Amino acid sequence: MQLTARLINVLPLQTGNGKNGQWRKQDIIVETDGQYPKKVCIAIWGDKINESQLQVGNLLKIDFDVESREFNGKWYTDCKAWKIEIAGGSQSEPSDWQAAPITEEPPMGVGAPVDDLPF
Image 1 (cartoon, rainbow, N blue to C red):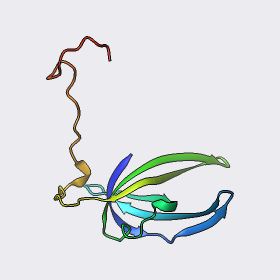
Image 2 (image 1 turned 60 degrees about the horizontal axis):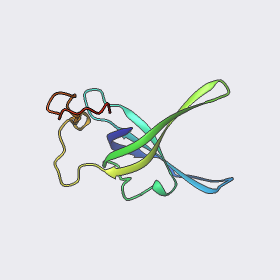
Image 3 (image 1 turned 180 degrees about the vertical axis):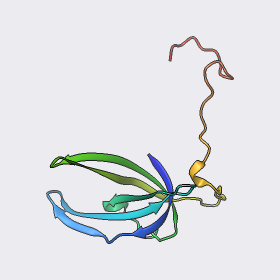
Image 4 (image 1 turned 120 degrees about the horizontal axis):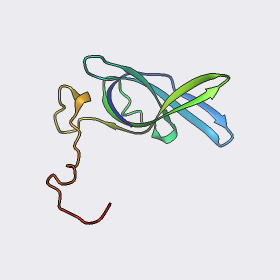
């Protein structure tokens, strides 16, 4: 999944030792744009933590996985980032950056070459 959101809070860095050695985890809180903004807590693990990107106010493009697990009859859900970039760059941002256009290929038969292959 991918999300573009503004960083609003960086929680304290968590560290520890596990069976595979030392680990680091950084939780961040981001807020989406739009009519109904949502706040999302995203975890960043290990070498993916880049303090220079994690400045409050930065607009971030975050690729992440969502995973749920059960423990003692309760379910817990984590959002784990696997790639983070500063959004925008040299191009100007649309005012409603949550609703960026999605490009799709045209359906078969509409502007597509005729092909006898079934795939």
